Image (cartoon, rainbow, N blue to C red):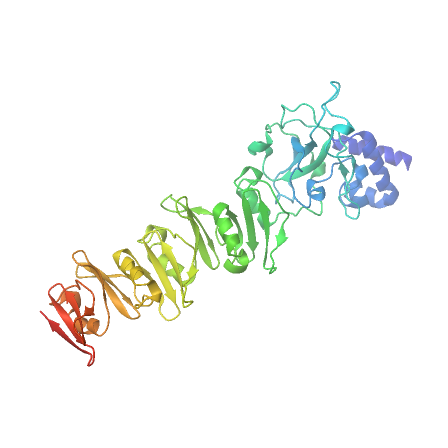
Length: 466
């Protein structure tokens, strides 16, 4: 058995480069003691025979940060990136290179000049092992070892506190201050920990967006299931990635993410169906969700548009159409009958009885002056439409007509019906130049460009006068 141990230790030393001969010999000895035939005859490492791959404290390797940092795969506060190495063909990175980053403790009182590592009393962590009861019990804050490609201006550090893994080359992450000088250790290829997940949709999306060096930055949380268990999500320094089997994985960032959070995240607005994209006019940004969209510009902020109001806005050309960007998120009307969105150049109002229609310009101003949907006209029942060089919108209880010469005027029944039967703005009377007003005890009069309409209230009779 002793001869076998010596031969196996020598073979293992020839294949690896990161740890001392004594640590390797000890683990090989454990493997042979626990499973001598299994270790010799089966294609596995000594560490696999003991507990997964190199996962014991005696293996000589450093614990993953996800294990000691509340499941978050990033350097803990009080540490700095000291160096990195890679392992090719890793399952964690979907078969691509996996990069390991050593997070070293800062030194509070410096080194003595003979060592690059400070003493126990100067460190932010204490030497020990990973938490009991799980497989990643590797060393914590013990290994005085440094590759040294990162933060080279910091000469004195503590030992390696823990290690981070990423699928993004460390030298592409500006905040880590790493050079591209590479080291490789294939023995770490299959190292894992409970806090690490292999090749997930969220991890792939994060890497696609630049990983820790992209707009999302580093992890703030592990991957967690959503409240309804329909998907999973992960928060990062610069945003979040949400995934469901229906929508895939998409990133939500900045003010759009803040607005989505205010709306109730995926519970009220559904999962994102796109990443955050720049609008065609280059002015703003947007993200589409299952049940709506959120649009943002520096001038308007981030506002949500959903349902039939969103459909009506889309038919008008989205933000490049006649209405422009939303100024508010969809809001219920004060009377509770419907909802609306205000846009840069108009509004869209919706109710179950009238559906969604836009109102803009002088017609919208006149309708607002009459009390919006709570006034005598009610909700719009048509979009604004052109007529005879002007425009009009129809409401539940009347219409507003506009022309450059007359401005926007309200016309209600029964004068409106008699006027339309006579040709409306294209008939003999033209556009209304005023609105209905009392004309004696039993009469109402409304003036038009080329005449007037007189209503006898008691009979409902309308006479058109030129």
